[in-house]
Length: 116
Ligand code: SF4
Image (cartoon, rainbow, N blue to C red; front, top):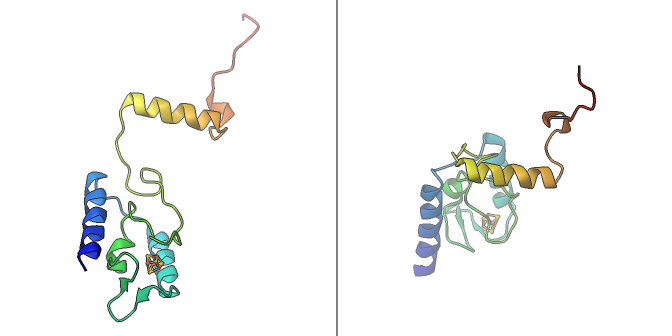
């Protein structure tokens, strides 16, 4: 029981630190559907038997993860509540997106050869 309280406490702290971001309705529904078919769920309490968390609360929090890695990953800041990041952090993120080819090439400034 002590470990379950610790786990839940960690989830709450992480959620609060990130600005309390929640998943959207579809993500929440998908998480609960996954829990409902999971053998670890204690259905009478709606509590996860692996981490001890109340799944109806935990599933709302974008920062939460399934201890058995059954939930689809949610990236906080994209799928969850928007978080403010500084210019430097944004620049690093943008560079990574560019490296992965995830930015639209038409967003980039194209060099011109001719002078009009
Ligand atoms: S959080 Fe994960 S391990 Fe726990 S009941 Fe839900 S699906 Fe199962």
